[in-house]
Image (cartoon, rainbow, N blue to C red; front, side):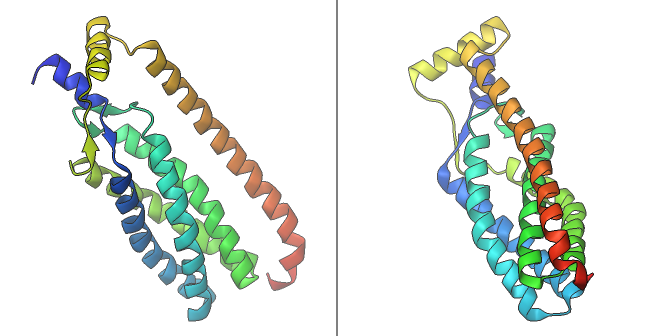
Length: 207
């Protein structure tokens, strides 16, 4: 392949259908794990199915939205695929949100902070590694990837290759994505602390 073709492959995008399939398949895999762990710690099939059902709807939508947002940046992409560091960052960012979501659903369904925290913490350890592997698998799948074909996009890729750096608008997008990631991490941590502070007195009798 020519240098320009390599640069174009770096700036590919993923179709909405690919993002939707990724989100739904992951919910089936992750939901199965949540079902087992919730059943294990709550000793109730009804509670397990309620948590999984609530998780499936909310996380399918939010993961699809997250995939579309991440698709706006080409950082960590090379040769027509996501690099390992991009997959790791996606897995960690998603897990930060997912832990808070699962914790909230488990608390409201089980009314037991101890059970909910066990479910969320088990998910955090196991699913982070599983999500990374899931992303690496999808990085090898070419279906649903759209490569730039328009003259304007090709010209942008040629400029990026000739100058050895990304055009200014791509650099700004990368910086904005990085800032938003930091805000998401900080906001999630504050939200979890506030949630724990508010709910601890309400269910302290169950612990």
